[in-house]
Length: 124
Image (cartoon, rainbow, N blue to C red):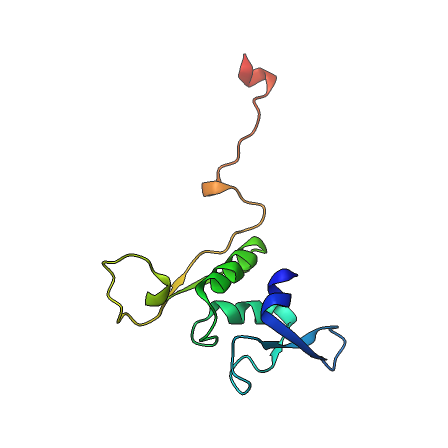
């Protein structure tokens, strides 16, 4: 996957049957939070979306990681910092905050509405 290849270095294989690898974040220091991240459950991609863990990730990389996780239905939190906002009315000394976003539920439609076709009896 391009997001992984561009932002991480593959390290050793995890010593279990999961067939996962450890990754090192290319944006973090050698001894920082991104020094050794297990690739299971998209932990490495989630690392890019958290400005407290990955301090040096560019905003476009954070956005790409959010889009990747949202496409997989895994992005349940959005981290917003003053550096990522573009509105001039927001002060630059705002501390990072976390907004909870509802997860997509599989098998449901918007507002729980299901559109069924009319039967012949209803059409008459």
